[in-house]
Every structure is written in structure tokens, then in C-alpha cells.
Image 1 (cartoon, one colour):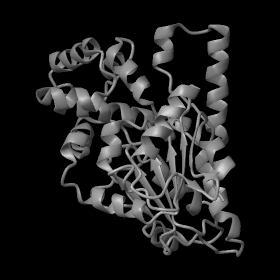
Image 2: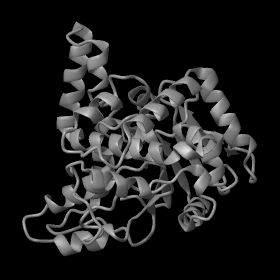
Image 3: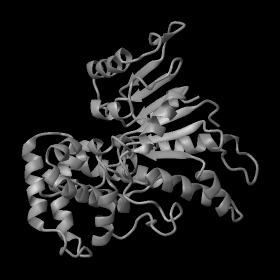
Length: 345
């Protein structure tokens, strides 16, 4: 069990091991005709009556030609297109959710897709329609660490001490679903109410919103995981999505900043360290004295890793970034699973 206050800050890369797109992949999907546009047209269950196709096409073309990587930044500079951008994001998240999987199944999908790529059995356009299972299965690793001390027959992890919290920039519900499904299927007896009680003690803050709560989170407004995509679902989900430029008065941001200020360890997982996202959480000023910081920089080179670390170190309002000669700001060009293996106590 985690015995010190630990906060996980999740970016898009944290969901990639389970079939969700990174920011770069999302841009590819939107901008290339073989991506979102093709899949949306092929989705027969979506009546295309409330969304004008020319508006989708306009967003696609403008976003493509803008050359900007961040869809949030693009929507902020094009407020008339923001609602369409959120609609497209909602579709992409639900589409990824339908194809998502965990554990051994995700690893098998990853290996099969890699084999197709090695042997050139599909063209480039066909690969855009495939989910990407990138990175190791850190959900399972953390889950099994949490269950490591719950040795009794009906023991559940205890989240009441506040030692574990998640601050996520993602709209998806994969982490919540994974924990709920795992705990509900772990025990022989019916411990559903106890599982719900424990999970509701766990803080998972979506600073930019969530496409929809799960059924177990909200019996009235909740939506099942792997839900069928419909027009009404997309309209509802897009209204739940916020961007950084709409977040100034979000009360969850204050709670997220307070969680960081009380942390003894902070793990940045799949996080891009964009200045606007760090600013939302008042980072690095929210990092307290004597807090150890670990972060992934998957695919980054040595110079990029140095720049990320420097950005954090120079903004600290506490002591220099060394404790008794040990470096406490650790940014590594690795994935989420390897970072936890290396540093999670």
C-alpha cells in the first residue's frame, strides 16, 4: 500500500497503453481523411441530422492547415469552431473506449498490431483506423501494488487516508472503469457496495472534464463503459468537455492544486509538460518542499529531458532541487510502467 501522500498527474500518454490516442495521434486522426472523417461517415448508428457535415470538414481543414499541434490552443483561437472540436473529441474518445482493453488482452493487441506493421500487411490509411496500444500496463502494476497488503479474504484497498490521488487532463474513464471492474471481480462474495464505498474515497479529478460519468458513479446521468455511440451521447459528452481557456474558475483546480501542495511524491505520467497545462495547476510553484518528483518523457531525447527538468527546477519556490545530495526531480525518457517500477515505493 502507498504510505505517503502521492499524486499522479496524468496526460494523454497515460491512457495510450489501453488503446486511447496521444495528442499527436488525435491530430493525425482528425486531419487525415482516413481518420475521423472516414469513421464518422461509416458510423451508421449516428443520425447526421444535427451536425452539418460542412462544419466538420471546415474544422478538419482549418486545424490541418494551422500546423498547430494542440487542439486546445486551436479551439481557443477559433471559438466559433470550439463546439465542433469538442464534438469530434467526444467521438474519438468513445470510439477509443469501444476498442479499449486491459491487461493481457491489451498486450496481445499491441503485439498483433506491431506484427502487422513489421510485415506491411496494411497500408498507412488502414493503420489510422487501428487503436494504438503504446507503453506498458501501468494500471495493472499499480493495482497489484495496492492489493499487495490486502491479504484477507474480503480485504479491500483503503483510500480514506488520502495518500493516493489522481489529477488527470484526460476526458476518458478508463482508469475508473479498470479499478471498478477489477475490484468487483476479485472477490467470491457480493461486495459491490463495499467496492463503491472505497472507490468513492479515491480522488480522481478531471481538470478538463469527463465525457460522461460511469453508471456506478451516477445512476441517472451515467453511461456504461463501451457504450454505443449515438448522436445524443455525443452532444451530451461534448458539453462536458472543457478546454484550458475555460478553466479559470473550475473549483476542481483549487482542489488539485491543494493535493499537489500536500504531496510527498508526484508522478507525471504521459504528461506533455505544456506550459499552459502546468500553469493551470500552478506548477511548479505547487510542488512543496521535500517532495520528490518523477516524470515520463517517452520518446524524448536527452536535451528535451534536460529542458523539461530545468523548467520545473527554475520555477520551484522552495529549496534547491537536491536533498542530501540526491536529485529529487527525475524526468526520464521512459513509459509510465517503467517509471513506476523504478521509483514507486
